[in-house]
Image 1 (spheres, rainbow, N blue to C red):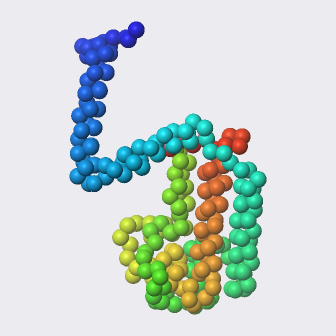
Image 2 (cartoon, rainbow, N blue to C red):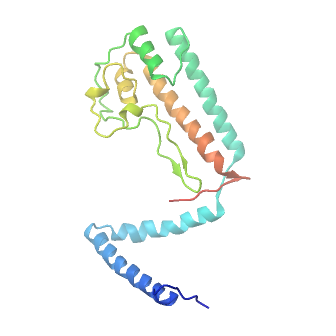
Length: 216
């Protein structure tokens, strides 16, 4: 049977009824908000059907092709190695690709590139957060927070503030026409970040040949 609550709150059945009434009133309010924003159709036709898909993904997991995953990892690591070799050939010495200080020394002191170059016409935006994707997984809360461009990760950063000796992605795009290295650094960051997500986040939730995730 249904246990009765104590402390003057009425029976468990009464509490359930009150909760149902509260939910019903919220539904009416939220439906009105959806109508006002012309979002009712997308909500009913896209988002609600998707909940069943996400639920099945949580229950069954995602099948992972381990052989293809290994090939992908090898390809990314090979590409990183190739970029490091090309970078060495361009500047004549090794350096830490993840160090903004060393990159600034190479780019502005050794290569003497100008930071006053305009952004390419095809890319006049300011990149917020650089190349750090936004992947998050709960059910363990796997989050990728690696940011090579942390100084530009604050909304409202102006293009002017990214000049000088900055090595954030938006600043590097200005320099691509002057030398091959800035474009190499951008590509290196993208691949490194993808590899970090793959190894540091996704594979952590691998069980046999499946990934077990929880969708927020």
